[in-house]
Length: 353
Image (tube, rainbow, N blue to C red; front, side, top):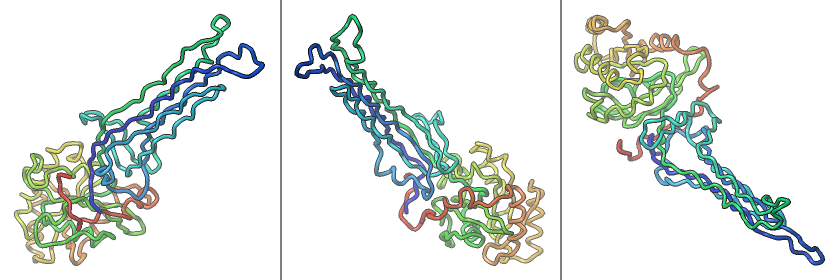
């Protein structure tokens, strides 16, 4: 399955049906009078958050959505049929933005949430409704209220409790595979993760959703590497886990690079609680790991958790710390179903969509 987290679509509600101009004509009925019925209401454009979706890929192939117009009024005082609403299903976590992306029109955070974005036009009046004591044979009618239309952007922000951040090749994919049901691609090169990945973590009788996003590099806020496009998927997380590779560059420098990118992105990411995890300690001795941990604490880390995503060493203590930031509930009660069909990053995909 391809992953797509942004899409621009055109939506149009249904116009109201026109009222009818008609007169009653029956044998032996003199002066039958007007009997033109009203037009029917046009269909609304309704967005609904549903389970089982975690990508906007469907909107790559269908960009125009138009509701039906209301039925015409008819003689014998028959009102035109109202058109059905056009219901557009989106994943939980989707935001609807104006065409200029300056205004958030709707934000879907719960399964079943529905928002009517465009109202269908009301049906026009038929000539029967214009009949008065002084106007016995009116011929005027209304054509029906016109449809509303607009272009909008859909932006998906995956809902997760905990987010993984770090430089490329810090071991995030190995970590999420170790602690959850995810099957993220693992490779000995940078940017093995090209799209966000979700996994359900079960720890000490509780469950939470963990999100892994592509690695950040210096200058990501200006578009370097994959850029900071996917940071939006961890905006809703309650706590971030920052993985630092013990065998990579200087850990304190790695910490500073990611912190700077989170600060540059904004949206409150720099204020979120963070757990600093020194990863791949199985590749170094205890003395080196402790020395790096001291450097990280001196650089501003409150606590450092030495772990190994490959062997599982130290992961329990890290997950215990993550649980302390989460409400006492199970993830499956609210949004666990979102990760049932997690995106398959083996498919070809481009960050440009």
